[in-house]
Structure formats: C-alpha cells, structure tokens
Length: 238
Length: 205
Image 1 (tube, each protein chain N blue to C red):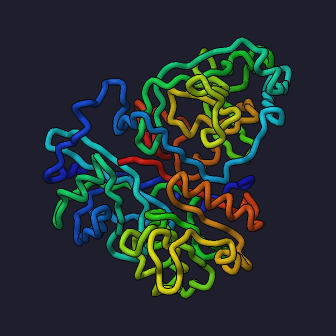
Image 2 (cartoon, rainbow over the protein chains, first blue to last red):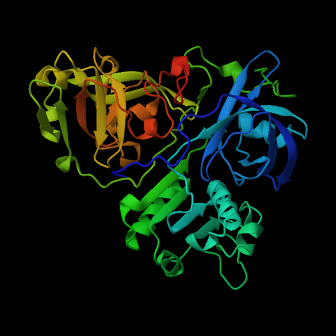
C-alpha cells in the first residue's frame, strides 16, 4: 500500500432514515435486511455504512456493516451476524421487523473497494463475504464477472451467507465443517487456490482476525505480493 | 432531519455505560479488536528505526536500543476506535514523543505531523496533538511486548484521538507546515479525529 488510491466517495453523506422493507432471518445467527433509505447515497462495491438505533429517550448505539447490495439496487442490503449479547445485532435479529425505522450513514471506506478495473481474487471467511457480494452483483450486472474470482470459506452451507448465490455464480466455496458435493470438509488447499491466482492484480481478504491472518499468510506463501493484498478484518463487535 | 426512533430498541448496554465513553462508543471489555488494511509485516525490533525529520532543526534517527535509552513513559487510560469500540484502562509502555522532539527541535513553522509506517501507511495529526505529553511511541502493552497484530514492535499512541491516528509499525514522524491527508484521511476519515466531538469522517464538524 505504498500508493494509497482513493476509489470511493471521500465524505459520507449525513445521517438518513432507513425503513426495513424486507427482512429474512437465516438460521440462528444471521439476519438479512433490505432497507429503503429516505436519502439514497452513492457507493462503490466493498464500502460499508453505519447503522444507528435510537431509543425513545435519545440513547443511541451504532455499528459498522458492510453493504451487500449492488450500488444500482434501489434498496440497501445488509447481512448482519448476531453476536452473543450484541446490542445492535441482537436487536436486529430478535426484535426488528418490516416497517421499522433505523438511522443510516454512508458510504464509509474508500480502500476495500473494487470497481472492476483490476482482475482480483477475493478470499473470505464467514460473513466476510458480505462486501464481496456487492462486488459480485456489480460485476454480473456490468458483465465483468470474469475479473472477479471468489473463494468463500464457511463452516456449513447454512452458516455461510449467500452460499447459494455464490455457488450459482461459479464461486469456489470451501466448507470446513461439512462436505459439499464431492469436496470433503476442509479449509481451501493451496492447490485449490492456485488456479484462481492466475493473472490477478489484487487480492481482497475479509473475515475475522484469525481468518485474515490465515488468508494473508496463505496468499503470501502462494507468491501474492503483500502490497497487492487489501484486508478488511473484524473483531467481535456486537 | 427528523431522527428516527427505532421501535422496540431500549439499549441493553446503557446501564453499564461509563461517563468516560465518548458519544457513539461502547466498551469492548477485555476484547481488543484488530483493524488493519494491509498484510501485517514481519518486523524484527533490531530492524526497526524511528526518524524525526521535515521541519526540524536536527533530523534524527533512533534505533530500537537508542529509543529505549530515552526516558521511559507509560500511558494508563482509555482508547477509542472509530468503529465504535472503546477499551478502558489500557496500559502502554514506551517513550513520550516529546523526548524525540526535544532532540530534533521542531522549527517554529511546523504545525502538523505525518506519521509514516514501514508498510507505507500514513496518518496526519496537528503537532499540538502529539506534544505536551499527549503522544507516545509504544512498545509494550500490559507489560508485554506489543504484538505485530497490534502494531508491534512499535506503534504511535495518541489515545485522545480515534485510534487510526495511532499508526502501527511507526517509522517516521515528518513535521510539516501545512496539513495533508494521510491514508484513511484520503479515504473519507477525519483530519483530526477527536472522539469527544465525534469527528469520524471528512466533513464532520
């Protein structure tokens, strides 16, 4: 990262209201929200936004979430992992329903973004796939999908967000706790990643701290230069 | 705009909310989330140096050993990340940035600092935010060597500003007359980053 490049919009827009237009609880730990914003904001794939909840007396709590939707989608889509004791994620999972209003601000971050110029590999763990879904949907709309290779790692097909969409799009999915077709449960083998690296100019790694350090180490061992790797990692923030 | 009240939201963490938490922050407890935009470098302490240059009378570079020969200093207090977590009662050991500036001698026209890391990461700060006992080079956390995931062997520590200003793997402090944006600042984050004023993003007052 010797030459930081600003791909995204520099300043986020002011806070706006988001109305829950659609929502889906997936398993015990995921909730997919589709929000209709009072003031839509432009963003590029890979950016995130801040979601803020406000109690009657003005108390607020806010968290950052990656955006899953294509910038052209009229609704803003988030996939939120429910964390134990999570003040925001717990509310979204247990209490929120269609029609509720939240506050949103975005877009945030201009580094972990992809707008189709560079052939790239995305290596993600768990909900780290969310910003990549925005990239994937954008790529498919603009017929750029051959420039975006994805290896999504998850525990099981139900725990990996967007598993069906990824498989249908031809992404490589590595499940670590259950078999997938003929593939025995395992993290991705170097021999499985190697063919995805041919001709790539950039690598995007997104996942937990533990996953990101594993992913970066693996990519480095496969010869990917450190300065082409962009990382977004998250700790436990509820 | 009208602020939307979220139906059914009461806020389960507020009972424990200490007054020392800046607006919009929550206490992460014993966790210390790691946020980095790049691959963590392998940097041995003996290969690390810190340089103070730019608008100074005497540009100077210290090795690991030379930096440790300066009078040591400890920070005990809180840190605040722009992604909304705060960590209370941390202890960092290292040396005050004032000690480096006492040797290098900032020129009167110096008003800003660009902190550079070995990785190419940069972050800009007003000079007044890193002088007067407000900033450290930290190489210990909780009495142990600072780990690479948290910026070891040495990171900048500016605890009264959002934590992206506390550059990991810090290797150079460049004093400047004019402000210019660093890495995250070019990518939408605030030039100063005071958590008590919620200066998170470019354009925040």
